[in-house]
Image (cartoon, rainbow over all chains, first blue to last red; front, side, top):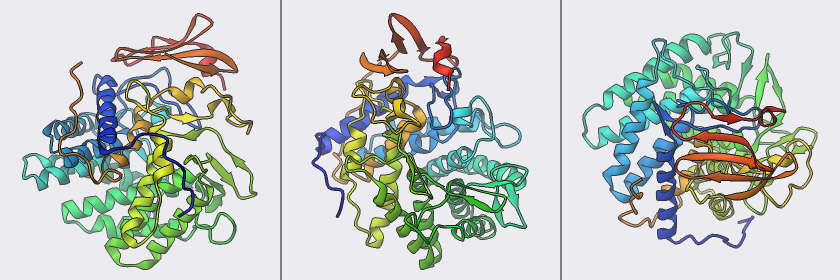
Length: 393
Length: 49
């Protein structure tokens, strides 16, 4: 397999478990009233002044990480943390079904995409786990996710003519990676509610619409454009955001048996691997004219690339996640959080970043650090039976 | 405490359980007291594009 690099970080199961426990400890330091807070840095914009609880995509990875740690360790501490995080979400839902401060880099505003769908996935994952544990209260999390999907996504963003979800109520822009996140939420809701309408009437048609726009012709074949505006793809290809599409396509294949989805997922993953650097990082965006805007390269966020590759492994796809795992683990800070990126100093310039990191590179963000979570379980199949518990504060 | 750069000049990043701050030439560029819903200090330079 390509892109082999020498591991740079000690990765015994114990070291991985300690890393995960340290991160769980750090997350507790990010608690504010109502949930997980802290500043946000991003490609487009930063939210530095508002540091309150953001009920956005951070909850997808936070809860997934807690559930993975629970499965790996059997410690109820982590299941309790997952439930507490789910309760943040329930308490953060307004009368319209939207969540408080769900715009991430644009916070504090509501109705963020794909954030509210990612939050719904988090809720549904908790409901599924509690149901499997025969614990009480799991139905309430499904009801909250259903309100979000019915009242916001279906009522406000569904376009019956295009048979897809738009990213705005004026039906101008479709964002494939956001549709992919929503697809997973719809599929999970169908599974847990027993109502196949979410998958069949909304999820699959929306995913099919995006699939029809997958690049199949040039060096970016397999990639999805960042968005489609008034029917025309805008050919900016973010490898990171393409990674978020792959698990949805794999799930669509698994649910329908349609190999078209699997072939599309493999093609997208191959696009990502063609662009991954030897150190495991990814360029920020590549364009149709072969230009690239390399910086910043996400560190914690690269966990979504591992998640994408791992989703294909059961289907025979060979994926060496080690360089990207090294890349992520090399960015863990003394606090237990993960640095967000490398190269913010060179954003837009293409100059080689200086040897010292930019201040925004180091700034750990709950909504990026959560995405390092795949290694909690997916990369540590020999996880020890008991994880170190975070020290008392 | 970690050495870093901000707008091409040396800066320092610090985080512990209670605070996250960025300083440059002795001045606080950014300070968030953990637990607060708003940052205590955000220098204009942090917000410039």
